[in-house]
Image (cartoon, rainbow, N blue to C red; front, side):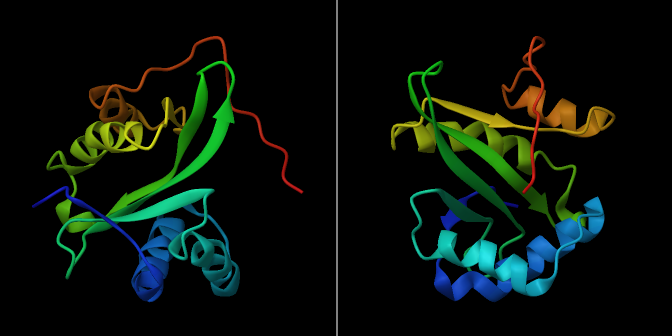
Length: 149
């Protein structure tokens, strides 16, 4: 299996929506189909706020990763946040996610991204091991906090 990344475009909306729905089902994230499509469509249309990549062969991808962009004075410029990453269950445990997360910063650095962040369930030790292998480190003094409105 290949961990190659392909920038998703408008023609990938249906495929990506299906992948995201599968991920959300696994994680217990409740979101209706219209909201999901409305959140994905701008990314596929070239929004400067983020990008969606399909993982694997272009004709038959095996997953996706979505990165959103922000600005950080602390990190010296643009930073990215791995909003979601998902692989089909049949191809997991082959090192593909680690490879994607190891290569993604190299690709994003070329676009000026200075740091890449992600969040992980505190109890999901398997995911934490993947992220550690890919070079991500916990920031012990900090925790992600959110306000939804």
